[in-house]
Length: 269
Image (tube, rainbow, N blue to C red; front, side):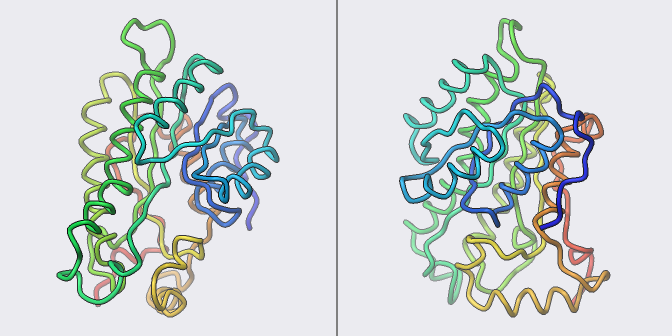
């Protein structure tokens, strides 16, 4: 993986909560590396004991003291995690939301065959969770009494399947479309408090989540052939963009989906 190249102090003194690291190939982990390289203090969440065994060593490698359990479908666990962040730091500057899930059977075949339960699950985990976390982050980034916090940055991760039909993406594409709309509405709500909300739409990358998409290797090969730059991105490209958006250069960017895909989004059939 390409190492972060930002200056060591562009985010010095900032505090970020990273939600959604699964392993060292996760986009959320690359974002964490770049934020850390820019001087940001980090906290991490994990889902269950199996993921804790993967996340904890990574978090400790960048000096994280807060490594918290949090299920994106549990209001109680979200309350507890954000309360611990408040207790430890008093406030929060950055929230990285890298959470998405759909049943494997709902990623294959015809979208019209998606079950009601599968549709609601994908929407809850992949889109509504951003609303729930943003609500809690708002109180730490810009409390009503003005005692702590000077705004902040919230970033989530999307994919071109939100705006184009991608085979074997199905209900997740619809969930990502909802996620991108959520970004715009949250940006409008939170903008007066100087909280910026953006999405990064990355090209295909080998991650744990991508392993759930049938024929993903073929997708990678086709993408490389069709992009104007004739190459795919890697995790570090996403990390660098996230660090930029969280830093001084991104202070007036909000409600936007940034395309990091070697230009694939502009190409026709």
